[in-house]
Amino acid sequence: MTDDAKPLPHGFPQEVSPSPEPRISIEDFAKIQMRVGQVVEAEKVAGSRKLIRLRVDIGTEVRQVVAGIAEAYEPGSLLNRKVVIVANLKPAKLMGIESNGMIVAASVGGRPVLVGDGIKVAKAGRKMPAVKKLHQSSDNNSKPPFIFGHSLQVLCLLAGGPVGHATAVPLAAGIHEGVVWSNRDQRTLLDKLVLLFLPVAQTLAQPVILIADAYYASRKIILPLLGAGHHLISRARTNAVAYWPAPQPKHRRRGRPRLYGQHVKLRSLFQHPEHFTAIPSPVYGERDVQITYRVVDLLWRPVARLVRFVLVNHPQRGLIVLLCTDLTLDPVDVIILYAYRYKIELSFRHALHVIGTYAYHFWMKTMTPLRRVSGNQYLHRKDQSYRTAVRRKLHAYHAHIQLGCIAQGLLQYLAIHFTATVWHSFGSWLRTMKLDVPPSELVVAYALRATLTDFLRIGPADAILRKFLARIIASAAPLRDQRKAA
Image (cartoon, rainbow, N blue to C red; front, side, top):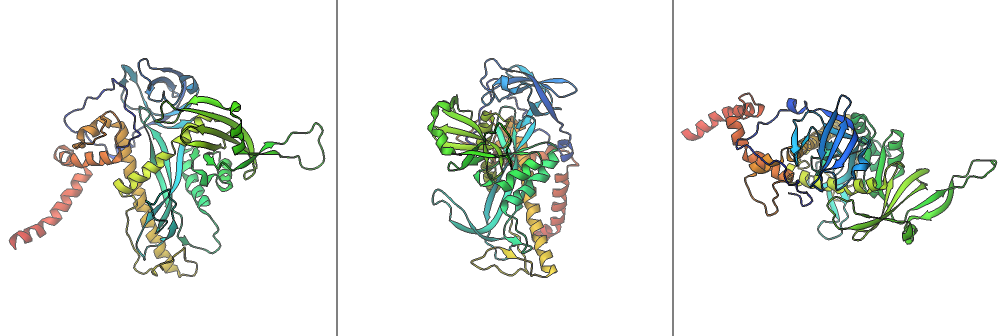
């Protein structure tokens, strides 16, 4: 179970039926109706420091929804904002107030939030396409400085449950290093992340905010995103330099108007604390922490346009400079959203150790073995049959990874929306167990294993899994009879 989870408010219904709840099929899962609505009224729930009662206009009606977001948002700041809700859930009561819907995706101004990052997975096979020698940095000696493996980039949707519990749901992943198909291909990891991001954003059919670390605060990321109507929140290096806009002359002169004014070292802005605003830390999980921040819109030369910089002085984390390409976004929202970036790291950990998303070991028999000092595998001089075989193997890797993303997303859905049932079916013990907190993917996996026999015993006779296992058992019967006879 994750340590960053927060408890449900006192009074949340915890009744659990002693019999296992019926599982849903993919067809039932597809019946979930997502609606984008506008908040027309918001107020805190008396007696709770986490719950806010919202009235959301979803077009056809105004719904009352109770959400656990009071620690992150003031009710007044939510007015006229757009949120994504599940519209066809049965009503539930939180603190005695009926909630007719559930906020499931973190959004800002109606825009979904995606988190992007890279991950390096060790692979020992010398006949595995795209395996190369990779460097990995670490603040301690827990990780070797170099490994052989696959370098991937992943996009996750930042989603939340009914009480403010956020999680990073993996949507897409790709192996972006190790194989070079043409010697004229000059694309970098940044270019390939954009190619991964744009189709996902197009599927969401609305402007998207991407959260990524300082490596992705680059012209190659920002300009394609802005060109498609999306925005980036990232972290700038404290030694970065920006410029004040040039003052406009009273009378137009010859030549191109001056764009850049006086240059500013962003770190020097921290030397003027009188321009900073003090607030309680809006970061999820931090209590009794006071931070100060300052927001300035400056010209950033890599993109040749105004960028919003949010300078944060945190008592434990030090000086932080956040970068946002959306000049209308509230600086507190920028701080809150970037603080959720760590959720993708947590998602990586569960994908590696619980789901086995990256635990594939497919190898290619006809592949030229890798050398010990291996870099990229250049295929522009290989014949077509060899290139086709490599493509087929990479497709197998990506299919395995995408199935892992789907499985992890289903576990996260069960953890958030069937919290009490999962804990009731867990059948084990944890020192940090909190029955009113959404469990981790590991706990959900244990609960599914523990209830598998009950599902097969009392589940529907036409269940796909039941038919599959019956076919396997029937095919193994002759072999079992032979062993008994021997």
